[in-house]
Length: 230
Image (cartoon, rainbow, N blue to C red; front, side, top):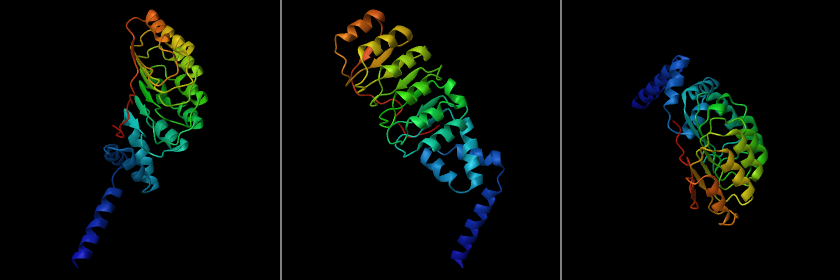
């Protein structure tokens, strides 16, 4: 009898939450702290999936770090997060150039102030250029541990004039020419992380001649590596 009572109570609670108005359900789901929780909630039913996407509209930060998120899922969720300012799709994600290109069409991209692509082995200049070319408000960028070249840095230099910091740790295909273009055009740049690159140390003297106040760091650093969304 006790077991039946507990089962009955559980069924009543489940029925109660299913009767919640769509806006209220979306608000409840917006309180979930991690992407993993959101993903699990979205798998409950079609109604809950729509509510998850609706809850994303109020989020300012979204992180897929450490999650095996693919191109289509990431793009769908970013498109739903219309007020997003901070996007972290770094290590662990199964994101390719196709995913970055899809994400670049999201309404929020032009308002993003921070993007982390740290350690994404499946992306190249093709996807990065497409994304940063629309990120006009970008202030902080982490593309460390990727295979980008000067082509991506030129795109950043041309589109992200508000950039304040960039992490290029272990970007071994970037040359001095790309760094010079970046520092020349991003006049608000305050800090650059160049650890693990193949650029000779004497090249950094030239960067300081362009921007004497520039802080050049050479230690590994991961920007926005948490797995929380808020």
